[in-house]
Length: 189
Image (cartoon, rainbow, N blue to C red; front, side):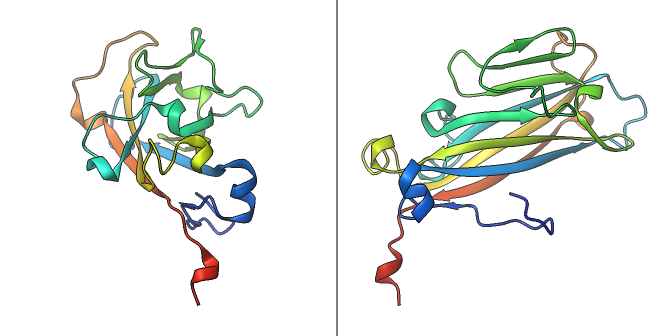
């Protein structure tokens, strides 16, 4: 999450917070930067893959089904009026975006001019979503109150349909971790 001064804000989701209690959701906005300044001949397309895992499962287990934990997942590039992904699959000459058949990975591949150009050979996307919480969404029953890792990978491609690159120097990964927990403030003095 980015605050006005560029620092991270709270990444905690609490179903007892006043705003969250009304909706059983907490909102997260983030920005992902992909830099390839050391690559002499960069390719024309960048692919991002987003997945979600839970600390309760050691973060290394099978990714979770995104729609069971996140809503209103949106990826925005250079055109804020036309998101790269906004809940429905996209497939054209410049952008391909969809959630995998098992629901566990969102893949967005876009021509570089569809992304936000931050500097020479540095591009970014804005990612936003609502984190589900509360008993009405299964937390405390079938889903754990825990830390969750939103993992993001990026890589370069020659075209909209090319297979993954074998060049490890173009691959990058990062993540954020948010906490979905119940905390009763009245009990803390």
